[in-house]
Structure formats: structure tokens, C-alpha cells
Image (cartoon, rainbow, N blue to C red; front, side, top):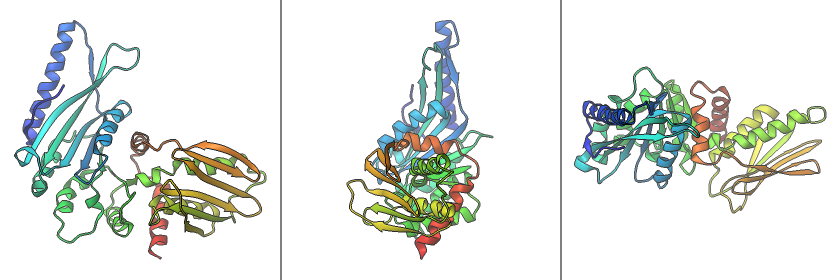
Length: 335
């Protein structure tokens, strides 16, 4: 169920939400029994713009996330064609759990704003968050990760970002000099951040960790040399994060080397000493693990936006492992 475009004013948006829920309640009465359960555990704000080539994928991800993380979803989209410069639409996203008659419904609000009116959008968003629940911002607007004096976009988004319990970004494909500057500033201001480039190496970290746990009688992680390879014009944040995580565990310096590969990003990691452990990409979602002379295939699960965001939304508190890796990765990148 959805509404047509309405003025993007908090009181009108909330009134329209009330109308949507009233309509759903009337359907219940016609059927003679409760069929709709309203669910909300957080406010999830998605900030996007024209640069976001995967915005349709992100919208579908939002729908999927509601099953595990019910929320009031607010999509703030910078759009030169926004109706009347600033407008909103209200939706109810509903689904039936398998084997159940009752629907579960969450709220979705889409706010479209022309770039020249971004400053007008923040009061609207601030006025429609759910009180007393966490606020998570998934910032897909790449320009927010750029350092630019007198940038209207950053100024407009500051009130929204300051409201967030956690802000999730994706440094894949951006200028890391500027992105790390922005994220460092957010951390200094006490904001909790997440980076999907860190989440993308979960399978790598878990595989390496499992190898050392299962072979603790003859294989020690300390004192090993670490070499990582990556594909692409510049070193990706995922390689920097994994190198930082390994350095903390092996107490040695990890080296990074560029190589050609059909799959951009992190390509392989090799830990060498008395024994060798190597993990390398053999496909878009597949890794090969070699421990000594033994080899096996490992699934590179968790690579879709849904899986990445699902993982990030399960960690809304302070993440000491990521924060330590970020500090070390940034320092290494600046050298």
C-alpha cells in the first residue's frame, strides 16, 4: 500500500502514515480477525543520489532487510527532478512469514529533494524518525565522503548524520585520502561508523581464524610474514583492513602488492613462515584455501548488499575490532 506524492513536511508525512495504517486496519475488520502486525525496531535512513548506480538494488535490499530488521525506512534521495523541489511518498511494506496467516508490515518513506534544496530536507527527516529507537544511516551518497570547503551537501547532511546511532558507508571505489579524512573526523566527534569494505572481508577473516584454531597444535599465527595482493588501479580499503587485522594478530608487517585479476579488489593473502597458509580468490564468490600441501574451496558468502547490511545492523554498538583495524589501516595508507 502506498500514497501519492505529498508535501515533505513531518506533520503531513506522519498523518499519511496514520491513514495507511487505518486502511490496513479496515482490511482486518473486513476479514473478521487481526491480519496485520506493525513492526519497528529502528529508524533506517538511506541517503542516495544520482551517483548511486545501484540505487535500485539498494531499494530491494531495504525491503529484504525489513524481514530481519523491521524498521521505519526513510529513503532520502537527491533528485534534480524532485516534484515541487521537495516531496514525499509513504508506503507500507508487508509480507507473510512462511506458514503464517498474519502479515507483518513496516513503514517506508521516500523523500525526494532537488540538490539545491538539500538544506530543507534535514528538518523533514529529523521530524519523522521513531522516538526512543536506534537510528541507523546507510549513506550511499559518495559526495559525503569527499572533503570540500563550503560543500552544501555535507552541510545539509550533518544534522542527519549527527542523529545516527551508527553510520554505515562504503569506501569501495572512492578516494581513500578524502574518505579516511571524513571518517576520522566522524570518529573524533564520537560517531559510530561501519564500512562495507570491512564487512566484505568477514569470510576471509573467519577462514583464517578457523585455520589457526583447528591447527593450534602445530600452527601459530605469530611471527608469520604476510603478503596481500589486490587488483585495480588503487589499493582498496578491504586490503588495507585485512592487512591491519593480520598485523595485529601476527605481530609482523603485512605487505601489499598489485596484480592483474578478473575480479577487482582483494585477490589473495599469503602467510608464510615454517608453514604456509594461502587464501586466494578463484571466482566472484569463491576462495581457495591452501594450508601446507592441503587445498580446499571456500565460499565467499556474504557479498550481497543484503548480507553486508544484515551483518552491520547486528552490531549497533562499539566494534573494537573494526576500530582498531581502521586506525591501523589509515595510518598505513598515509605512510
